[in-house]
Length: 81
Image 1 (cartoon, helix red, strand yellow):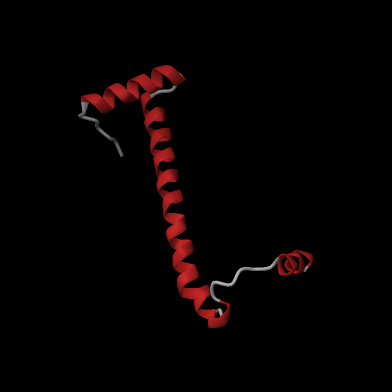
Image 2: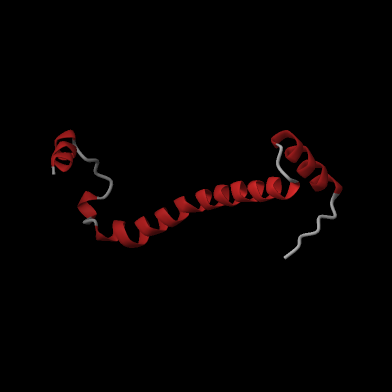
């Protein structure tokens, strides 16, 4: 599906990136969009992790253990497994 760009600044930026990289403008725009999508996806991950912790993990922890840190001995035991 074709994409028509009717914005002079976008056209200028695409041309400049293409010139500096030796890519076509289409390839420069594609890579820029991939990078932006990856950035947006990374930013959303903490939200999903936090939601998982709030909904699935923390409710299963006994109240008397909430907020209690793990001692060095407990951590060593976990690593030794």
